[in-house]
Image (cartoon, rainbow, N blue to C red; front, side, top):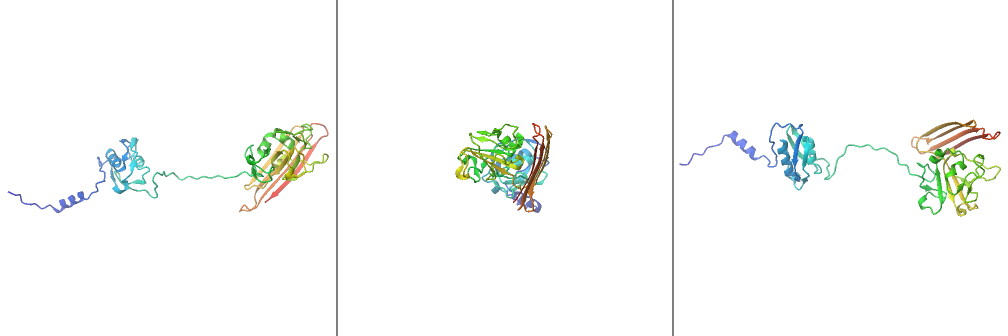
Length: 332
C-alpha cells in the first residue's frame, strides 16, 4: 500500500535549499574553533592551487572561500614545516597574484591582489639617496687613479683611449706624499727626475723627463721658464697634474722632445666645501691654508672657489728663509 506524501516544513525546506546553494569550492574547517595564531606543522605537496588550498584548509582547520576561476591553471609549491596561519597562506599564494582576506577567526576569502603581477615579489618601501659624480679631465679624482686626461689631446678623453704615454697625479696622492711643490709631487712619476738640484733646492722647479727639461703649463698656458725668475706654483692651489711624455709640438708648439707637464688649478665645486689647515714643523716652519667653494645662488647656477695660503720657514741652511703667500679664485 503506497505511503501518503508528506509536505516539508517551510523552515526545513529553506535549510535544504541553502545547503544546495553553497559553493562546491569552499573548503570546510575540520574544527570550527581553530586558533589561527597557533603555529602548526604542515605537509602539503606541490600541485594544483585549488587542491593545495583544500589540503591546507583541512590541516589548518580553516574555511577558505574562493572563486574557482581565480585558481584555474595556477600551481603552488606546497608547504613543508611549521608556520602560523597568515604566513602559511602567504607562502601558498606566493607568485599567484592572489591574497587572503580574513573574514573571521577561522574564515578567509581568496581574492585578487591589487596591482599584483604574476611572479613578482612586493618589497617594503626603500629610500635610496646618493650623488653621482662623473670624473672629468679638469675635476677632482677620488683616489690615486685617474681615468681621464686633457693634455694629450686638449680634449676630455679617457686615458685608455689616449695613444700617448701620460700620467696623472691626483689631489689625494699629493696629500698622501705631503708635497708642497711640483718637484716633490713628481717623485713617483715614471721617466721623471724631479729634483735635479737636490731636494733642498725648493725655490725652483727644475726637473727632467727622458733627459730633457719639459715645458711647464698651467691650465694649458705656458709658464715662464727663465732660470733666474721662474714662478713656482704651490701644490695647494692645484687639483691635479698631468705628465705627457714624448714630443708634443703638434699641440703645444716649440717644445723639447721630453714632453709637457700641465698643472690644473682648482675649480668651483657644486657642493659647499670649506677647509682650513694649520701646519708647524722643523726649522720653524709655519703654514696656514684655507679653501672655500660651493654654489652662490639657491639654484646652483653660479659657483665659486677661493683658496689661499701663507708659508714661512727658516730653511735647513742659514739665511735661506722661505716665505710664500698665495691667493687664487675661480668663478663659474
